[in-house]
Image (cartoon, rainbow, N blue to C red; front, side, top):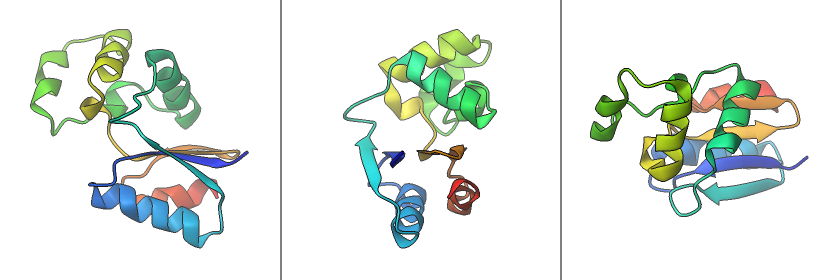
Length: 111
């Protein structure tokens, strides 16, 4: 399985996680999720594989996240799919698992 990163090239943490993958010699598929957002079901699968909830993957720094304070996981996933800026980044998947690259060094756990 190729490594996959849901990436925002403007984000320093996302760039750092990508650099870790490349330095490890991984063949990486880069998905700029702001241009090609994942479906809610795909996000749910990724978070489940990472042992996270949708709320754990919600980018709280975005003003739009405040309206999701009392939302269910399904509602959060739907909001993320509709407005991908709400997705905390980067998300990285390898054959060994999924990690949210915050801090970017967490990606090493699945290399």
